Length: 252
Image (cartoon, helix red, strand yellow):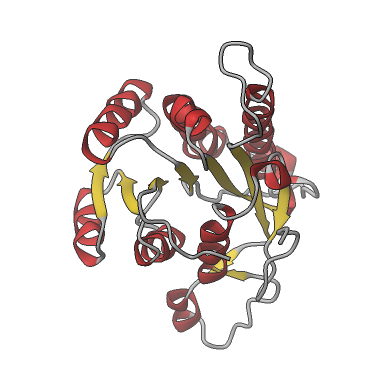
């Protein structure tokens, strides 16, 4: 499997999170041009200065016009986009159904779903025309097995999955489009599924905790790199579980 992403441009939304940093680092080391996007200017600047081929962009991804301006800037600076890795999110919970607060719902809806809708729309045409267009999100096991305490989180994650599957359907139909017929499918939208993510900082903060079933951010980063080497038709519209130490369901 090729590890070379030279010549590819990948947008990492939510780049300053632990998962984002891991993905940016892995893509940079593979030779990709990385657009590291976040709302935190100081951390974006720090990240863009830490790795080769990384350009930092500060953007409120909940603002569609700001995202469209971002897309224009990335195209002008780095060229057409081949990948969009959406890592924007957060977690909020409550005490049962009656304890699901409106402010938590609004936060989750905006951070998880609105940012995905905006970025996927702004970069859709780039991904659709790229020879290896890829959109990937990270979802949670709880989206398919929700609890009362995590109702809002699970509901919004489920909506994000549905949106991603709709993008996958759009990519699937590009193959037969009269105006631009393709001999085979080139673009794919997919969902990585985890119980939760873990990183070294979390382990250091709670050295007594085992984090059972959690997926290390390095596993996610490796999976992101690998999807660019797998045929689009094999992964488009797929939910791919990432376990604690291995990739599950990624075709060879």
